[in-house]
Length: 290
Length: 333
Image (cartoon, rainbow over all chains, first blue to last red; front, side, top):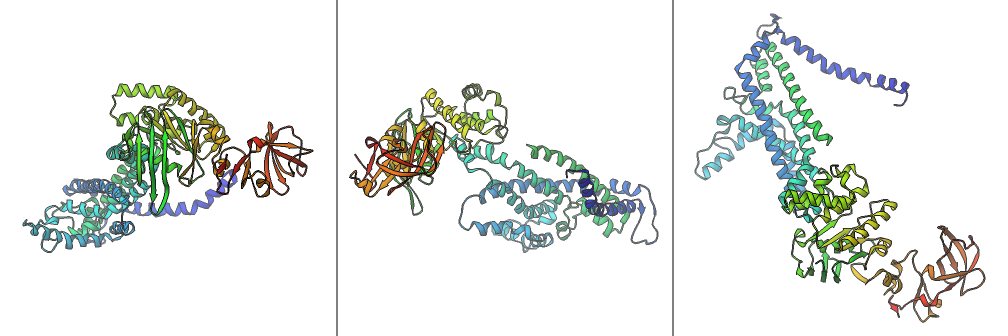
């Protein structure tokens, strides 16, 4: 792009895709904002009228809203905690030379390839079911009362299911990072008298820091909008105990038929996601520069 | 102090014996160079001494103590790696301090030792930089700094100069030799470059296919090579080997004559030939001569010996410095 001519030609060339992307984003956003300012209920078609900011007032003062914010954060942080720590542990194990390494690695990746709805249903019916589930069977085997996960600890159960799905992703990224660690550095640390724990702490962990940030960034984006797992297991309940922001917007629009309120919720979710993204990018900018 | 003895040490990978069996004595304060072509097992031997590989059989005695089963950190050795193996996220200071920190030294002691090492290696101005902000030679010095702060019984160098450019390599060679004069610690140095071996070593160990071909001082190896391999490996340009009738004239299967021990003349001599390629270095000229009935010989003449491609020349070997070998490649003395 040396000359003015090539530069303006380049701009002309990319203009269509930029415009298309812009329209792709702007049109739905504008429509959502527009709907959020209407009194728009599917049960009363043809009765739409301008409602000002009242949809926002209702949504923000809804007690379920704060529960949903808390649940959203709990899911994101809980899953990140489990997958990052579990991913580091698993990748360290998988990095060891062992018999059947290829097969084991494929098995580890498998959960990531299963659809969220299927995974959640498998967990709900085959593991966590208080009558037929594996956990119930195990509990009975040692003479304990089976624990009804989805009724008594719904949020924790969902975190567990989602973490199970994302663990392979974290493991995979961290494993590749681990394999790029220079063998001579490890040997040098060994000669320098560093034990296994010191080598992990002073050598492996700093080496993984970049990969860990990538895992956190990508997972946060997807975890803010966990939906299928909640829909097929707890349906947000009991009460609103496992409702996150995405599910709350869904409930508003398709269970209460309040499109206006749901749109307001959607806009609030967008704003919150941007706030999270802002802090995330700052944190990541620091790590990726180093 | 830093004496190292290998007794019957062998290393087997699967069915392949990389090192069949080696006996070697290294006395305290010696600068020993392991030299040989790539794949001769010299690096493996060094890693066996370091403890980074387990010996398959035999014993390694360091400082009178059987160290065969000891982990690397307990052997009192430190190593400089080919890739330097600096810790990339740590500053130069933390890199050099790392072994001391692992040994649980006090902060004040660490600071003092790091400062001393940095002064010796001219790194004082770079202590707060990260390794990637340093040049190749500086990184090399940091790696050496990390090795010397522990005051080990012996230093192990694994081809430390092979990633540096030619000019820097000559400099660092000198610096490492000076460091050895200063510290008087045993050093074991692995290289495939016979020039490095000749210039730095007190004692050279020539290895080939996991076997020791010869051990001796640089000049011993140069003047009295035990066999064809050592004769061909030590010295640059390579020794000329002649077999057949010309060798039989000296009652040998093969004779060897170094390029610097061939006298050239334009008028008369033992062997006649024509000049092939002339490499002019200024002070010297290396002539590749196609000798009649013998083959190509390399000869070193002074820079002002005026011949060019195609000129006839006569070569006369210095009979005193002729090396004779029997049909097994061993030297006849």
